[in-house]
Image (cartoon, rainbow, N blue to C red; front, side, top):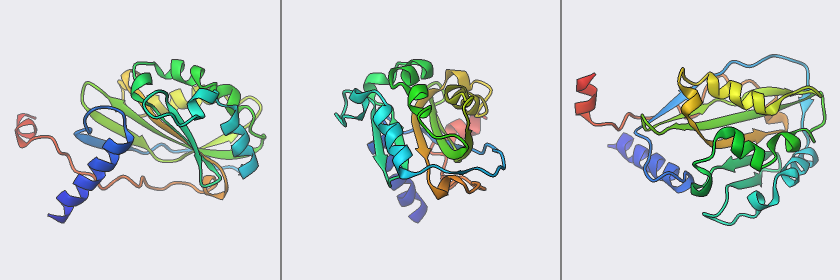
Length: 197
């Protein structure tokens, strides 16, 4: 009973944050191995500069009109895709918010951590990655990095919708994520569909 209650709370939390109309019947954690290196963390000042470099209408916090980009914990930036932008491709959305240009304001020889959430509309399944450390160099292609992470989620991941992108700086970005914090989930699909498999 406690597990069902926990799942209900988790689903409610997802529905409060995600713009699509129903909760996914399953959440699939995706672990992506990253690199080991001797780079340093990104400062609060640098993260604030990235945030201020995104297209202004996306940082205005107008609910239901635009995708919201929030700056919190002094080191984290979170993009949550709104209903209005749900039909856009990942490339269109990243271009609209000026993602690449904003990320290029980061100082080099640093490490950031990126978390992605995508949604498979056909299967009604959400995919979440661990925090993947990314080196910030002069030649880093941040858009290609997002595509690379999405491609590693599933063979058909190119059809998935980007739902959430979190960029984390500070000391927390230096540590390796050896697990995904969303591993406690239940498949809420009906028993009939399981029997059919």
